[in-house]
Image 1 (cartoon, one colour):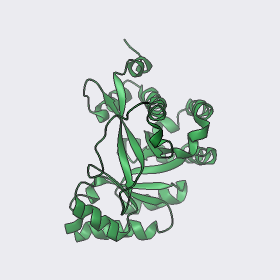
Image 2 (cartoon, helix red, strand yellow):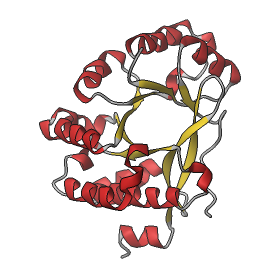
Image 3 (cartoon, helix red, strand yellow):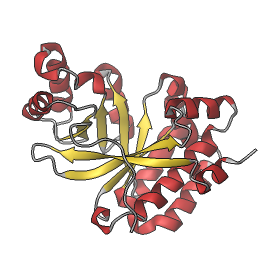
Image 4 (cartoon, one colour):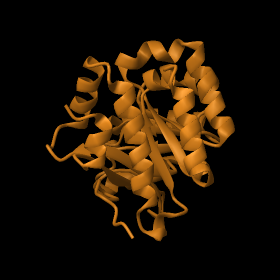
Length: 240
């Protein structure tokens, strides 16, 4: 049976990149990198299968490493842009994680301040958020120069203490709030709550923006950045 590393080397697993743009001019500031497979398997299924086989940390770290390699092999036009890379809290608390990060630090040192670790709010990973080692390692990552983003944020009441504990650089608001935002007073109220709370930091990114009217509404509410099909679908980057 092929190892996860071999699957990446043979490009059975690869990465697609989706633009993240600033408002209101839609200028691209970076990409979120997304795991894909030639077999067309849903990424959530890939990670779920890895978790069942106790291979999630291996898949997570191999994906992280190959995402960076793929990005840095791409066109020089991306050299100053941010790269948002997903990672699970359970990977961060693994005993092997500090050694992995040290390898990344040595190999990619000039680029650390452009790497954003995007940490998912998955219910399955909920226990990890309360482990002291998790908070401590987030602090260590920030000291090294990595940026931190909290992903798929939707529960305003639940996220405020995480902002206090972790001091993330970015908050990515769940796509639920971008869909029909322009016609939903309730969603606008929640989005404005995030904007007011994060007036100075962290910076807000609205996910799932697909319609011009929702983009315009989000911009008027004070959202600084967004991601979604309106700005571009996930795709491979051209390599030099």
